[in-house]
Image 1: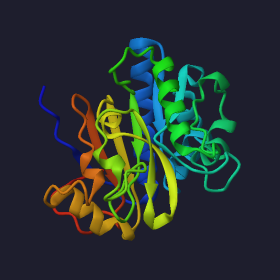
Image 2 (image 1 turned 45 degrees about the vertical axis):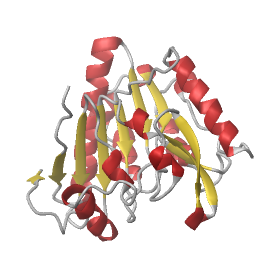
Image 3 (image 1 turned 60 degrees about the vertical axis):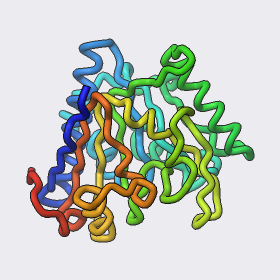
Image 4 (image 1 turned 120 degrees about the vertical axis):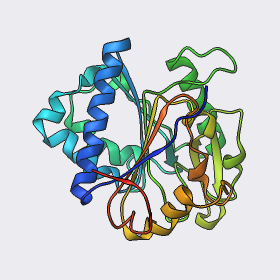
Length: 255
């Protein structure tokens, strides 16, 4: 089956970015619950998703549009820190989203970034995915929605330029040494990200403009721009960007 073309939408402002992302989230959740009885979503870290999380918890129409007890939460990557650390992706989602919603605690599948051995934490999360999705050897989980961000260097999840995770084709989860940050990260791999039903990138800020143009309109150089690796095999790919992040793009759809 041929890959679907990516869609790029420029929102009117940052608020509109989060509103559109929230609408997409609720729609994906509703369709998944109607079709299979649950919604499997991968959350992203960093600061950008906080605006989306705030809307999902504070807007009653959005909040009531999701059957939260049927949502299973996973993460695209994690810093090599304890869950209470200010850098923890899980910790951010817990404070900004999860503790405000009637979620089932047994449906929260976090990466254990506090494990001193990042490779062991990655292997443990791979086993977590295998059990959660009842995977047979060699199979890949299919998430209903994966939320991703992108750094100014073109990285996404913890797939950083030139690192081993960019080349991973077999494992579901890997520990990835990021030299410029002098730390390990734990991340889902390209095969998992590309098996999703939907992938949505949220890109905000002028510091992302050059990378976004390079990823969307430049030559294919995934080792330099790992976000280019994300091309779902049989799912949809949507880039949502605010005007500052999209300032260097040419033909796009505005919402």
